Length: 219
Length: 219
Image (tube, rainbow over all chains, first blue to last red; front, side, top):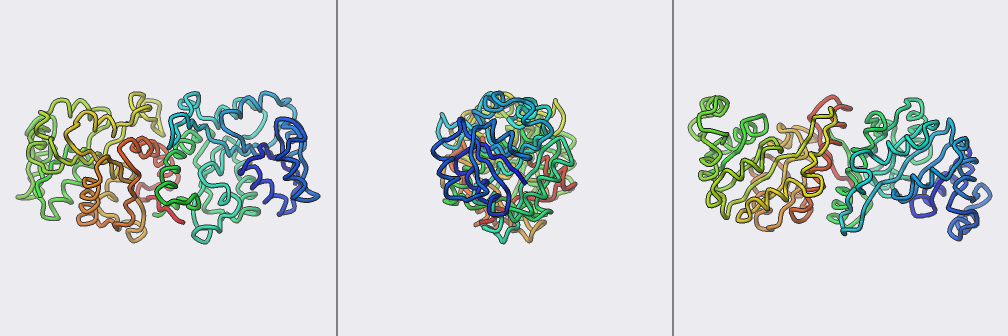
């Protein structure tokens, strides 16, 4: 599959690399084609890796991962022709975090009432936005086996049931998630709640002194 | 030990009953002495159970549990003579939830920037406020063994280390919690993060169709 990954940081690199390793063709998108980090990633990752602008990656991908700083996501989406994202699945991994008052972060004021996931969906009404993977460390996103033999949970939010199922399949097939550990919480408005637990995640990370943990629902 | 429990609802009744069953003397406090629910609880619970006003229960208890609707907690505390709570541990089980826009709830606007836990501590500066037990169902609060053989986590927030240790001991000795599953997240400001996960908890409850679950940190 052809997949666009927006973002050249730890999250974007981990996801793009894991997708290439699973045989997908991946274009890493950044503010402008030829960015130093994206070129370095492409050169070390091999022939199925490419890089370009956000618009290039949007046009290239059948599925798009958003792996950006939450504060900039809406501006980036506004810069892309709507046709390049039309009818595509957008996996929103971002969080609207405000670190200005220190740790743990707060939710940025602009997203306290209406979540970033909802605002992403509103910004690209022709696309199918699925919030996922935003509640754990990037190493675990792409290899669930790293803790508890892969037995722990992530949470899926989105308006389109078919799109959510496709995202679940992608996570199972590429990132070693167990299908029954991918919990569908409801429509994209429920992203408000998964974004809201990220400051709590930061506190637990500080308490355990490692980002390599996750939450498992036990019942 | 003599313990005051503020609140006559499901949470207050469960905690008060479990404490009496463990040999403690418990006074259930409500808006005025002689409330129908508190009297009924006392009459069915036995000789170590008493009831009275909030001020009566504050004066009676060496430790106080707050098991009230979060919207009313500060008004109740303002109605109690400061001396009745001085030097006492207050276990704050409350959440500042707003159900006015339906499910899942939101955090009440008055507590989005400064948590209810922090505002409780500010309201009773002579007491030691410990936020605990606010992230799970009342049946599980008082018997951790009900899911996963008792192996799951709760989160403790408060400014005073000695008070937090006493609360941990109380939870271990009375409610079947394992000491190493009681995670100290830091001072009372961290209550902001544990209150913020409650709307997420509601979504997970809806997804699993039971309130009898909890989160276990796996690493």
